[in-house]
Length: 238
Image (cartoon, rainbow, N blue to C red; front, side, top):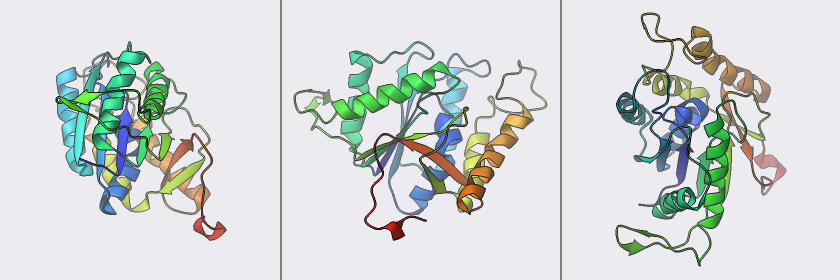
């Protein structure tokens, strides 16, 4: 199955928080989008791997994605080595996306930067003919995405580009809210974490609003790039 966009996240909910609005918008525009979670988020203070599985499934339905998979890497302990790279290469070759979105290049959670570099490296390796992978008994063709973009997460990194998600902020917020164990719940008896406060939940929307203000729209999501963004004309820029 060929996809237009393949989105990777170190943990279930990374994608929704970082680029849920962009995913929803591209799907509304007719693009086929798939999501790949590297881990099941089993080290999270709240919830379990099983509840995160269900929450990820619920969020996927809200976003309307074509497919979602989980690679089952060890939360907190996966590394950027040959074994993990080849598993990501398999996914890139399986879905042959034009664009890959992945974690922030630097962030508070150690898995985010690791996941970012792992996916970026795998996207390059996936285009090398002499790296052989197979899936379901079939040898895969090489494939390299045209672009790899990194969404912004906890740290307020300066974006290289911003996507107007004004018509999709409600879908983004609903997809985040699907992770009921992870975010603000005044009735929860579980321990508090940096992402369980009402301030954090509110910040998702006001950060999108602030970036939107800077580009002249209501809401936006920011991305960093690995190489220069090219346009045919200055008039392609908004």
